[in-house]
Image 1 (cartoon, rainbow, N blue to C red):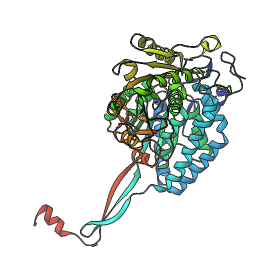
Image 2 (cartoon, rainbow, N blue to C red):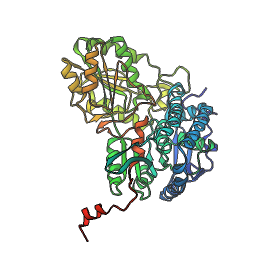
Image 3 (tube, rainbow, N blue to C red):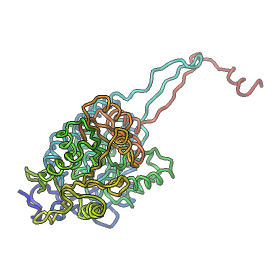
Image 4 (cartoon, helix red, strand yellow):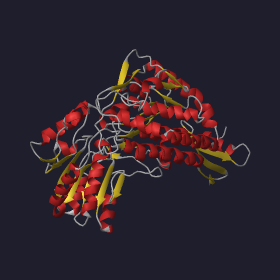
Length: 511
């Protein structure tokens, strides 16, 4: 059994697995050409797992060229052929599920039970969904809308997509970007976060092993400043899809605008968790702890702001704090671990800074510190509950991205919904009530891309994911994501099969 601080055991032989390099271009692994190396670090122990050569601009050029070369063949394949390839891909992923789960846990510090039960099965399901959806890329029915002309609409792939995925869900975010793009007939160059490249590389290799042609999926593993920005601005990339912080998203939009690219942004979140006074208190407390601590709080949809109607407020604070105290921090590979470390010591220190500053204006009811002992070697931080902060305070308004839940009271329903909407973000939210009219009002009036009722955090492949306001625009997952990765063409036929001289006279007059 692995213990934080021990030598890396047989869990994942990354150095041997990727001996040929950590760039996947044109169907094969290659070494990066930037002249610089980077180490993947196990956040549970601080130990280096894998050192590789970072991608430079030459690698981005090579990946884009491979994607361009693959586009004509892949885009002209029938939907059935693409569907068959994706079905084979899903089968390969299922065969390698344990390998993916362990690699994801190692590079991210996620509990193995989370990657086994959530990250990897969700990715396999998403692949199977897009295998079916690839056969349903429909245009619109034909019709005669102008005299003797028949019009219809074609839905076509757009070309080479350049995508950038974050470090919090490396496997799932890679899948969310790659799958709809290639199911629609595009080819793609994906840049994963340089600190978590392992499962993106395994994903691309699995696709190749499943028979998806070389060059359809390419991975360049480099820094955002060098490889990422160059990919976004590349003249042969026709669309950019980015998931990450709102601040970086603004820079991505700025660079993409220079070449008039299509843009899809899934950015930050500060999800409200609204508990009305008729809610099932026990269910709400359990939902808040699960929703706030998923992935150690490193989730844009995590519950971060709990607004609790005053009759339930003190009981909610007390019970939530008590439940947080039972959450078990530990080795991600240990069966009893509920919560792993944050992605890095720097991220842990950032989270601690938010909580430490809040002590001057709010109550830290639970947690609020890093654990001692053996866990001190990793980037661990205790589940934390903060109460009584002001609505305009930093800890309420800013994205913390850690295991921290802030709780505030409200009086009227109007106030609860107003407070829920009172941040720049609008990615996700939840409302807790046994009253169908209250719940329905919340779904209408809370400004977020997803509003759960009496639950928080579940997602499904058939439904879209994306935000409002500063949380970005565009959709991942579901058939709605095809809107991002296809373009619409109007086709018009003249049914008379004769020269339309009357049109000439209309435009030019008699000659």
